[in-house]
Length: 400
Image (cartoon, rainbow, N blue to C red):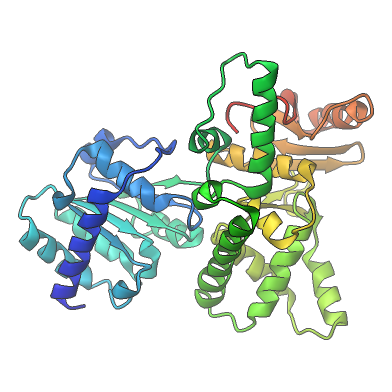
Protein backbone atom coordinates (compact mmCIF):
# COMPACT_ATOMS: atom_id res chain seq x y z
CA UNK A 1 0.00 0.00 0.00
CA UNK A 2 1.25 3.50 -0.85
CA UNK A 3 2.96 5.29 2.07
CA UNK A 4 1.09 8.54 1.39
CA UNK A 5 -2.23 6.71 1.72
CA UNK A 6 -1.06 5.18 5.00
CA UNK A 7 -0.09 8.62 6.32
CA UNK A 8 -3.48 9.99 5.27
CA UNK A 9 -5.20 7.14 7.14
CA UNK A 10 -3.07 7.87 10.24
CA UNK A 11 -4.06 11.54 10.17
CA UNK A 12 -7.72 10.65 9.73
CA UNK A 13 -7.50 8.36 12.74
CA UNK A 14 -5.85 11.04 14.84
CA UNK A 15 -8.66 13.45 13.96
CA UNK A 16 -11.19 10.85 15.10
CA UNK A 17 -9.35 10.37 18.37
CA UNK A 18 -9.32 14.11 18.99
CA UNK A 19 -13.06 14.50 18.43
CA UNK A 20 -14.52 11.28 19.88
CA UNK A 21 -16.15 11.02 23.28
CA UNK A 22 -18.74 8.72 24.77
CA UNK A 23 -20.02 6.74 27.72
CA UNK A 24 -17.41 4.54 29.35
CA UNK A 25 -17.63 0.77 29.12
CA UNK A 26 -16.92 -1.73 31.89
CA UNK A 27 -13.72 -3.01 30.31
CA UNK A 28 -10.81 -3.19 32.75
CA UNK A 29 -7.34 -3.50 31.20
CA UNK A 30 -4.13 -3.55 33.25
CA UNK A 31 -2.12 -1.13 31.12
CA UNK A 32 0.82 -1.01 33.54
CA UNK A 33 1.31 -4.77 33.36
CA UNK A 34 1.04 -4.71 29.58
CA UNK A 35 3.63 -1.97 29.24
CA UNK A 36 6.02 -3.77 31.57
CA UNK A 37 5.57 -7.12 29.84
CA UNK A 38 5.48 -5.83 26.27
CA UNK A 39 2.30 -7.79 25.53
CA UNK A 40 -0.30 -6.66 23.03
CA UNK A 41 -4.05 -6.64 23.69
CA UNK A 42 -6.80 -8.19 21.57
CA UNK A 43 -10.33 -6.95 22.27
CA UNK A 44 -12.61 -9.49 20.65
CA UNK A 45 -16.37 -9.54 20.24
CA UNK A 46 -19.30 -8.93 17.90
CA UNK A 47 -19.29 -6.08 15.45
CA UNK A 48 -20.93 -2.87 16.68
CA UNK A 49 -20.67 -3.90 20.34
CA UNK A 50 -18.37 -0.98 21.12
CA UNK A 51 -14.89 -2.34 20.40
CA UNK A 52 -13.92 0.74 18.41
CA UNK A 53 -14.92 3.04 21.26
CA UNK A 54 -12.94 0.83 23.63
CA UNK A 55 -9.83 1.87 21.67
CA UNK A 56 -10.71 5.53 22.27
CA UNK A 57 -11.12 4.66 25.94
CA UNK A 58 -7.65 3.06 25.95
CA UNK A 59 -6.10 6.24 24.58
CA UNK A 60 -7.82 8.30 27.29
CA UNK A 61 -6.72 5.92 30.04
CA UNK A 62 -3.11 6.11 28.87
CA UNK A 63 -3.38 9.92 28.65
CA UNK A 64 -1.59 10.11 25.31
CA UNK A 65 -2.35 12.96 22.88
CA UNK A 66 -3.90 11.87 19.55
CA UNK A 67 -0.82 12.88 17.55
CA UNK A 68 1.20 10.18 19.33
CA UNK A 69 -1.32 7.47 18.43
CA UNK A 70 -2.10 5.45 15.33
CA UNK A 71 -5.74 4.48 14.86
CA UNK A 72 -6.64 2.42 11.79
CA UNK A 73 -9.95 0.74 10.98
CA UNK A 74 -9.20 -2.13 8.63
CA UNK A 75 -12.87 -2.59 7.77
CA UNK A 76 -12.71 0.78 6.00
CA UNK A 77 -12.69 0.64 2.21
CA UNK A 78 -9.63 2.90 2.05
CA UNK A 79 -7.56 0.21 3.80
CA UNK A 80 -8.70 -2.84 1.87
CA UNK A 81 -5.39 -2.96 0.02
CA UNK A 82 -3.41 -3.13 3.28
CA UNK A 83 -1.31 -6.30 3.53
CA UNK A 84 0.85 -7.86 6.25
CA UNK A 85 4.04 -6.48 4.68
CA UNK A 86 2.59 -2.95 4.97
CA UNK A 87 3.00 -2.95 8.75
CA UNK A 88 6.65 -2.05 8.24
CA UNK A 89 5.56 0.92 6.10
CA UNK A 90 3.04 1.80 8.80
CA UNK A 91 5.72 2.03 11.49
CA UNK A 92 7.94 4.15 9.23
CA UNK A 93 5.05 6.45 8.26
CA UNK A 94 4.01 6.92 11.89
CA UNK A 95 7.61 7.72 12.86
CA UNK A 96 7.88 10.29 10.08
CA UNK A 97 4.70 11.98 11.29
CA UNK A 98 5.80 11.88 14.95
CA UNK A 99 9.29 10.56 15.76
CA UNK A 100 8.56 9.90 19.44
CA UNK A 101 9.09 6.23 20.14
CA UNK A 102 6.19 5.57 22.48
CA UNK A 103 3.54 5.49 19.79
CA UNK A 104 0.30 3.73 20.62
CA UNK A 105 -1.15 1.53 17.87
CA UNK A 106 -4.94 1.07 17.96
CA UNK A 107 -5.84 -1.33 15.15
CA UNK A 108 -9.55 -1.97 14.59
CA UNK A 109 -10.95 -5.14 12.96
CA UNK A 110 -7.45 -6.45 12.34
CA UNK A 111 -8.69 -9.84 11.13
CA UNK A 112 -9.35 -8.11 7.79
CA UNK A 113 -5.57 -8.15 7.17
CA UNK A 114 -4.30 -11.60 6.15
CA UNK A 115 -1.27 -12.58 8.21
CA UNK A 116 -1.86 -9.75 10.70
CA UNK A 117 0.03 -11.62 13.45
CA UNK A 118 3.35 -10.84 11.74
CA UNK A 119 2.43 -7.16 11.81
CA UNK A 120 1.67 -7.26 15.53
CA UNK A 121 5.03 -8.92 16.22
CA UNK A 122 6.82 -6.32 14.08
CA UNK A 123 5.28 -3.42 16.02
CA UNK A 124 6.02 -5.12 19.34
CA UNK A 125 9.64 -5.65 18.34
CA UNK A 126 9.86 -1.91 17.66
CA UNK A 127 8.80 -1.28 21.25
CA UNK A 128 5.31 0.03 20.48
CA UNK A 129 2.17 -0.60 22.51
CA UNK A 130 -0.39 -2.45 20.41
CA UNK A 131 -4.13 -2.81 21.01
CA UNK A 132 -6.23 -4.55 18.37
CA UNK A 133 -9.87 -5.50 17.97
CA UNK A 134 -11.41 -8.37 16.06
CA UNK A 135 -14.78 -9.95 15.29
CA UNK A 136 -13.86 -13.58 14.74
CA UNK A 137 -13.17 -15.89 17.67
CA UNK A 138 -11.38 -18.65 15.76
CA UNK A 139 -8.98 -16.30 13.99
CA UNK A 140 -7.70 -15.04 17.33
CA UNK A 141 -7.82 -18.42 19.06
CA UNK A 142 -5.55 -19.87 16.38
CA UNK A 143 -3.07 -17.01 16.57
CA UNK A 144 -3.13 -16.75 20.35
CA UNK A 145 -2.24 -20.43 20.47
CA UNK A 146 0.48 -20.37 17.79
CA UNK A 147 2.49 -17.43 16.50
CA UNK A 148 1.30 -14.97 19.17
CA UNK A 149 1.57 -17.34 22.13
CA UNK A 150 2.68 -15.38 25.18
CA UNK A 151 2.74 -12.10 23.25
CA UNK A 152 -0.91 -11.03 23.44
CA UNK A 153 -3.74 -11.02 25.98
CA UNK A 154 -7.36 -11.42 24.91
CA UNK A 155 -10.40 -9.59 26.29
CA UNK A 156 -13.97 -10.15 25.13
CA UNK A 157 -16.35 -7.20 24.79
CA UNK A 158 -20.04 -8.05 24.52
CA UNK A 159 -22.95 -5.66 23.90
CA UNK A 160 -23.92 -3.52 26.87
CA UNK A 161 -24.58 -5.13 30.22
CA UNK A 162 -27.78 -4.06 31.96
CA UNK A 163 -25.82 -1.76 34.27
CA UNK A 164 -24.16 -0.16 31.22
CA UNK A 165 -27.58 0.06 29.55
CA UNK A 166 -28.89 2.00 32.57
CA UNK A 167 -25.90 4.34 32.34
CA UNK A 168 -26.67 4.97 28.65
CA UNK A 169 -30.25 5.73 29.70
CA UNK A 170 -28.97 8.04 32.48
CA UNK A 171 -30.94 5.97 35.01
CA UNK A 172 -29.60 5.67 38.55
CA UNK A 173 -31.18 3.63 41.33
CA UNK A 174 -30.49 3.50 45.05
CA UNK A 175 -29.24 0.32 46.68
CA UNK A 176 -32.68 -0.01 48.28
CA UNK A 177 -34.96 1.29 45.48
CA UNK A 178 -38.46 2.55 46.15
CA UNK A 179 -41.49 0.86 44.58
CA UNK A 180 -41.54 3.55 41.87
CA UNK A 181 -37.86 2.96 41.13
CA UNK A 182 -38.42 -0.79 41.00
CA UNK A 183 -41.22 -0.29 38.50
CA UNK A 184 -39.04 1.95 36.33
CA UNK A 185 -36.13 -0.46 36.54
CA UNK A 186 -38.39 -3.31 35.42
CA UNK A 187 -39.67 -1.29 32.44
CA UNK A 188 -36.10 -0.54 31.43
CA UNK A 189 -35.15 -4.19 31.86
CA UNK A 190 -38.05 -5.20 29.60
CA UNK A 191 -36.75 -2.77 26.97
CA UNK A 192 -33.26 -4.21 27.37
CA UNK A 193 -34.56 -7.77 26.95
CA UNK A 194 -36.51 -6.91 23.80
CA UNK A 195 -34.03 -4.67 21.98
CA UNK A 196 -30.70 -5.81 23.42
CA UNK A 197 -27.52 -3.96 24.26
CA UNK A 198 -25.90 -2.77 21.04
CA UNK A 199 -25.04 0.88 21.91
CA UNK A 200 -26.40 2.36 18.69
CA UNK A 201 -29.70 0.50 19.13
CA UNK A 202 -29.99 1.59 22.77
CA UNK A 203 -29.59 5.24 21.80
CA UNK A 204 -31.90 5.05 18.76
CA UNK A 205 -35.44 6.42 19.00
CA UNK A 206 -38.36 4.37 17.73
CA UNK A 207 -38.86 0.67 17.15
CA UNK A 208 -38.58 0.87 13.37
CA UNK A 209 -35.17 2.54 13.58
CA UNK A 210 -33.98 0.01 16.15
CA UNK A 211 -35.14 -2.89 13.99
CA UNK A 212 -33.51 -1.44 10.87
CA UNK A 213 -30.19 -1.10 12.72
CA UNK A 214 -30.38 -4.69 14.00
CA UNK A 215 -31.21 -5.96 10.52
CA UNK A 216 -28.15 -4.20 9.11
CA UNK A 217 -25.94 -5.69 11.83
CA UNK A 218 -27.25 -9.16 11.17
CA UNK A 219 -26.64 -8.82 7.44
CA UNK A 220 -23.02 -7.72 7.95
CA UNK A 221 -22.28 -10.51 10.43
CA UNK A 222 -23.93 -13.20 8.33
CA UNK A 223 -22.64 -12.22 4.91
CA UNK A 224 -19.28 -10.65 5.68
CA UNK A 225 -18.17 -12.68 8.71
CA UNK A 226 -19.67 -16.01 7.68
CA UNK A 227 -20.49 -16.24 3.95
CA UNK A 228 -17.62 -14.19 2.53
CA UNK A 229 -14.98 -15.07 5.12
CA UNK A 230 -15.50 -18.81 4.67
CA UNK A 231 -16.27 -18.75 0.95
CA UNK A 232 -19.73 -20.27 1.34
CA UNK A 233 -21.74 -20.49 -1.85
CA UNK A 234 -25.23 -20.89 -0.39
CA UNK A 235 -25.96 -17.71 1.59
CA UNK A 236 -29.65 -18.65 1.76
CA UNK A 237 -28.77 -21.81 3.69
CA UNK A 238 -26.85 -19.76 6.23
CA UNK A 239 -29.98 -17.64 6.73
CA UNK A 240 -32.09 -20.78 7.12
CA UNK A 241 -29.77 -22.21 9.76
CA UNK A 242 -29.70 -18.93 11.66
CA UNK A 243 -33.50 -18.73 11.50
CA UNK A 244 -33.72 -22.24 13.00
CA UNK A 245 -31.32 -21.29 15.79
CA UNK A 246 -33.24 -18.12 16.59
CA UNK A 247 -36.58 -19.91 16.58
CA UNK A 248 -35.30 -22.51 19.05
CA UNK A 249 -32.94 -20.40 21.14
CA UNK A 250 -32.64 -21.44 24.81
CA UNK A 251 -33.85 -24.90 23.70
CA UNK A 252 -32.01 -27.98 22.47
CA UNK A 253 -31.56 -28.06 18.71
CA UNK A 254 -30.96 -30.90 16.27
CA UNK A 255 -28.83 -30.47 13.17
CA UNK A 256 -29.92 -33.94 12.11
CA UNK A 257 -33.57 -32.83 12.17
CA UNK A 258 -32.72 -29.76 10.12
CA UNK A 259 -30.94 -31.98 7.61
CA UNK A 260 -33.99 -34.19 7.19
CA UNK A 261 -36.32 -31.18 6.94
CA UNK A 262 -34.20 -29.49 4.30
CA UNK A 263 -33.88 -32.75 2.40
CA UNK A 264 -37.68 -33.22 2.37
CA UNK A 265 -37.98 -29.70 0.93
CA UNK A 266 -35.63 -30.58 -1.90
CA UNK A 267 -32.80 -28.42 -0.55
CA UNK A 268 -29.22 -29.58 -0.88
CA UNK A 269 -27.41 -29.52 2.44
CA UNK A 270 -24.89 -31.90 3.98
CA UNK A 271 -24.78 -32.51 7.70
CA UNK A 272 -21.13 -31.50 7.91
CA UNK A 273 -21.96 -28.27 6.11
CA UNK A 274 -24.77 -27.50 8.54
CA UNK A 275 -22.52 -28.13 11.54
CA UNK A 276 -19.91 -25.86 9.95
CA UNK A 277 -22.44 -23.03 9.54
CA UNK A 278 -23.34 -23.25 13.24
CA UNK A 279 -19.63 -23.11 14.08
CA UNK A 280 -19.08 -20.09 11.82
CA UNK A 281 -22.05 -18.24 13.37
CA UNK A 282 -20.56 -18.86 16.80
CA UNK A 283 -17.13 -17.62 15.68
CA UNK A 284 -18.77 -14.44 14.35
CA UNK A 285 -20.40 -13.81 17.75
CA UNK A 286 -23.93 -14.19 16.47
CA UNK A 287 -24.79 -17.17 18.68
CA UNK A 288 -23.34 -19.13 21.58
CA UNK A 289 -23.90 -22.86 22.09
CA UNK A 290 -23.89 -24.71 25.40
CA UNK A 291 -23.22 -28.40 25.96
CA UNK A 292 -25.23 -30.70 28.21
CA UNK A 293 -23.27 -31.46 31.39
CA UNK A 294 -25.12 -34.78 31.53
CA UNK A 295 -23.69 -35.78 28.11
CA UNK A 296 -21.13 -33.23 26.83
CA UNK A 297 -20.77 -34.99 23.47
CA UNK A 298 -24.53 -35.08 22.91
CA UNK A 299 -27.22 -32.42 22.65
CA UNK A 300 -26.63 -28.67 22.63
CA UNK A 301 -28.58 -25.47 23.22
CA UNK A 302 -28.19 -22.21 21.33
CA UNK A 303 -28.34 -18.66 22.65
CA UNK A 304 -28.03 -15.26 20.98
CA UNK A 305 -25.12 -12.95 21.73
CA UNK A 306 -27.68 -10.15 21.76
CA UNK A 307 -31.45 -10.58 22.27
CA UNK A 308 -32.11 -7.93 19.64
CA UNK A 309 -31.49 -10.58 16.99
CA UNK A 310 -34.58 -12.39 18.26
CA UNK A 311 -36.65 -9.25 17.74
CA UNK A 312 -35.12 -8.78 14.30
CA UNK A 313 -36.25 -12.24 13.17
CA UNK A 314 -39.49 -12.77 15.11
CA UNK A 315 -41.07 -9.34 15.18
CA UNK A 316 -44.42 -10.41 16.67
CA UNK A 317 -43.09 -12.59 19.48
CA UNK A 318 -41.90 -11.44 22.91
CA UNK A 319 -41.11 -14.45 25.03
CA UNK A 320 -39.73 -12.71 28.12
CA UNK A 321 -38.85 -16.01 29.75
CA UNK A 322 -36.50 -16.94 26.92
CA UNK A 323 -35.13 -13.40 26.65
CA UNK A 324 -34.44 -13.30 30.39
CA UNK A 325 -32.60 -16.63 30.25
CA UNK A 326 -30.60 -15.42 27.25
CA UNK A 327 -29.62 -12.20 29.03
CA UNK A 328 -28.36 -14.17 32.03
CA UNK A 329 -26.25 -16.39 29.79
CA UNK A 330 -24.52 -13.37 28.22
CA UNK A 331 -24.06 -11.92 31.71
CA UNK A 332 -22.21 -15.07 32.74
CA UNK A 333 -20.05 -14.89 29.62
CA UNK A 334 -19.09 -11.31 30.49
CA UNK A 335 -17.65 -12.61 33.74
CA UNK A 336 -15.53 -15.15 31.89
CA UNK A 337 -17.81 -18.02 32.92
CA UNK A 338 -18.60 -20.56 30.21
CA UNK A 339 -21.54 -22.52 31.63
CA UNK A 340 -23.14 -25.76 30.58
CA UNK A 341 -26.73 -26.82 31.10
CA UNK A 342 -28.03 -30.06 32.57
CA UNK A 343 -30.95 -32.12 31.32
CA UNK A 344 -32.25 -35.34 32.83
CA UNK A 345 -35.46 -37.21 33.72
CA UNK A 346 -36.08 -34.85 36.67
CA UNK A 347 -35.99 -31.75 34.50
CA UNK A 348 -33.44 -29.20 33.40
CA UNK A 349 -30.97 -26.82 34.99
CA UNK A 350 -30.50 -23.76 32.80
CA UNK A 351 -26.89 -23.02 33.74
CA UNK A 352 -24.26 -25.16 35.42
CA UNK A 353 -21.23 -23.15 36.52
CA UNK A 354 -18.24 -24.28 38.60
CA UNK A 355 -19.91 -22.81 41.71
CA UNK A 356 -23.66 -22.80 41.10
CA UNK A 357 -26.76 -24.32 39.56
CA UNK A 358 -28.87 -21.49 38.13
CA UNK A 359 -32.50 -21.51 37.05
CA UNK A 360 -33.88 -18.60 35.04
CA UNK A 361 -37.61 -17.88 35.16
CA UNK A 362 -39.62 -14.79 34.30
CA UNK A 363 -41.72 -15.31 37.43
CA UNK A 364 -41.47 -17.62 40.43
CA UNK A 365 -44.86 -18.69 41.79
CA UNK A 366 -46.51 -21.57 43.56
CA UNK A 367 -47.47 -22.86 40.13
CA UNK A 368 -43.90 -23.29 38.88
CA UNK A 369 -41.81 -23.44 42.05
CA UNK A 370 -41.74 -27.24 42.21
CA UNK A 371 -40.79 -27.52 38.54
CA UNK A 372 -37.93 -25.06 38.97
CA UNK A 373 -36.55 -26.59 42.17
CA UNK A 374 -37.02 -30.31 41.46
CA UNK A 375 -33.93 -30.69 39.21
CA UNK A 376 -31.56 -29.32 41.88
CA UNK A 377 -31.44 -32.55 43.88
CA UNK A 378 -31.07 -34.64 40.73
CA UNK A 379 -28.16 -32.66 39.30
CA UNK A 380 -26.44 -32.58 42.71
CA UNK A 381 -26.45 -36.39 42.81
CA UNK A 382 -24.56 -36.46 39.50
CA UNK A 383 -22.27 -33.43 39.76
CA UNK A 384 -22.06 -32.70 43.47
CA UNK A 385 -23.59 -29.99 45.62
CA UNK A 386 -23.24 -26.36 44.55
CA UNK A 387 -25.03 -23.12 45.30
CA UNK A 388 -28.65 -23.18 44.10
CA UNK A 389 -30.08 -20.02 42.52
CA UNK A 390 -33.40 -19.10 40.94
CA UNK A 391 -33.14 -15.73 39.20
CA UNK A 392 -36.10 -13.57 38.15
CA UNK A 393 -36.31 -10.14 36.46
CA UNK A 394 -37.75 -8.65 39.64
CA UNK A 395 -34.36 -9.07 41.31
CA UNK A 396 -31.72 -8.97 38.55
CA UNK A 397 -28.27 -10.03 39.77
CA UNK A 398 -25.60 -7.30 39.90
CA UNK A 399 -23.52 -9.08 37.25
CA UNK A 400 -26.28 -8.85 34.61
